[in-house]
Structures are given as C-alpha cells and as structure tokens.
Image 1 (cartoon, helix red, strand yellow):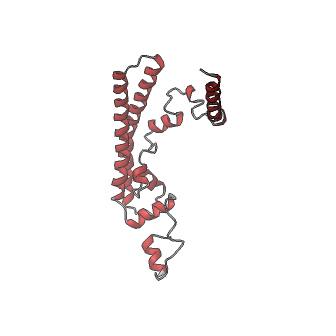
Image 2: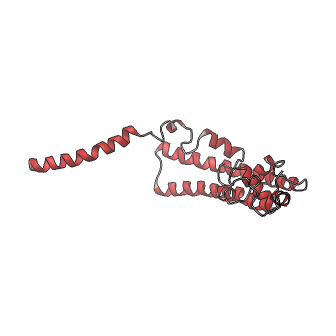
Image 3: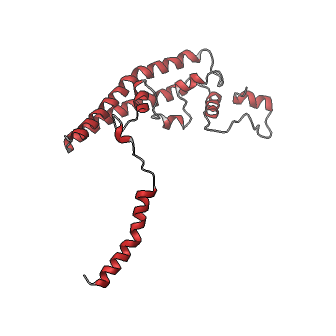
Length: 196
C-alpha cells in the first residue's frame, strides 16, 4: 500500500478506535462476577425464589394489566379489603399455585444446571443444545402458566373496586380516594371506590 493510503486508513481507524476503547474501558462490565455463580444464568436469589414457588416476575403480564396475584391479595387483604368469604378461596389459589410451582421451578433449575454443565464440560453440540433449551423452556412455560393462570382466577373472585384498590396499593395507579372528581357525591364516590 502507498504511504498516503496507509495514512488515510490510520486516520480512519484512529477516529473509530477511541469509541471502541471508550466502550471497553469506560463502561461498566455487566456480567463481571457472574462467572462465579454455580448456574451462570441464575443468581442465588433466583434459585431460592424458584425453589420456594415464588413468582419470579413471570406473572407481570397479568399483574401489570389489572389482574391481582393471589399471594399479594392476601398480603393486602385488610387494606383492599377482602371479604371473609373471599379469603379461603384466595388461599386455595395460593396453595394450588405453590404445589404446582415448586416442582416446576425445580425442573427449571435442573434444566439450567444441565445447560451449565454442558457448556462447562465443553461437551455441547447443536442437537444437544436444542434439547437442553427445549427442556428449560418447557419448564419455564409451565411455570409461567401456573403463575399467570392464578392471577386471572383470582380476578374472578374480586369486585371491580377491590381490583382498583389493589392496583393503587401496589403503586400501579394514582389513589382515586385522594381526588374526588367534581360533580360526585363524596360519600357515594368513596363507597363505590372502596375508600376507607
């Protein structure tokens, strides 16, 4: 190459190198420390949550679209308020959920452990990887179904004002009890909205 071409290339590369270096050295390293995890894709708290049958954020499509979770309903029962007759039915949903979620969570942890072991040993190929991923996704799908289904079942047990109150208590909407719209009878409005 001619010296002039090399100079143009060097200038061109020189202009892009600081950007690469800046990203490499100036930005946080998001996975640093994760290499020490037993299962790289799961933190210790993730594993604990899955083993105890916790939601692990899998029910967010229901939770954030106005379908309360049964465990959270029980936690907030006196503030919603739940009726005496509703409580055992919601407790049954929580028990049903945990009985199904604990083994499904264990299956997901086992599947992620198998993926981890395959990569750690270097004994991975396309066919085995597809099967390992299918096993993990099957467990995850079952777990999501378990949690999401309990949300819509719980919703059927509630009155609209209880759902609204739940969403306020969980921080998803502004408290309607603070601002009574003009033209409404305050006492009737508070009663209808479930205000205390």
